[in-house]
Amino acid sequence: MQFAIKNIFLLQTAHRKLQTISYFSNSMTDHIIVAIDGYSSCGKSTLAKALAKKLHFVYVDSGAMYRAVALYFLRNKIDLQNSQQVSEALKKIHLNFHSRDYETHITLNDEEVSAEIRLMPVSESVSAVSALHDVRKEMVKQQQRMGRSKNIVMDGRDIGTAVFPEATVKIFMTADPRVRAERRFKELAPKNPDITLEEVFENLAHRDYQDTTRKESPLRRAEDAIILDNTDLTPDEQLLFALSKVEPYL
Image (cartoon, rainbow, N blue to C red):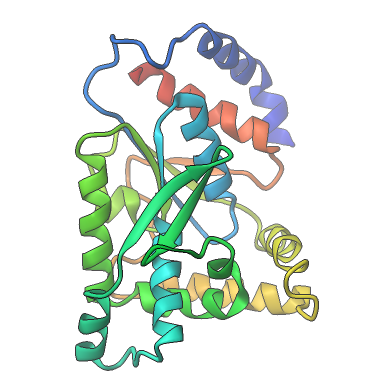
């Protein structure tokens, strides 16, 4: 709340300025890449989607890509310790994004999996899957291809450090762990009625440890990333903050 009070005038001013901008203007220079990194359940995807929609940029959900790979591995019982199995499996995985009803959806080998990749079994395995060198190499290759010719907003764990270290704007999101767990619990509870808040809290703590200590592209803040602590911020306040950082480059 303290952030919101101190910065409300700045955010309102940025909002008024942004309302006067035509995001399809021909004055836009080379393509813009907005990288949003941070801890699990900090609202990275929510912010990235809203920002992309406002700016008319393409939203690339890197987290969904790794979740889709994790889902494929689970379905096909791929042994993460068997590099040959992993390598062969990656050759059979084809991911695509498409928009429907103003929402971004992901397909795994032409199958819509946007809902299934958010279930707990995938959440529990995605950090281990995304830590694999071959997996990250393949996903980064696809992500970088998307960023070469489009204005994009991408969120994840290492977008501003490993995927797009030259990103135009880098935002690093964080929030109080208990608040993050409560947000995640509200998201999971409708589809997982037996889950408890404590289980979600422990799962997030475990994922934080895995994400920050893994050898392959660990979660860390880029030196030039802007910190956004959204513990006490509403989605609208987060969006205005992000827009104020991107606006100078439009």
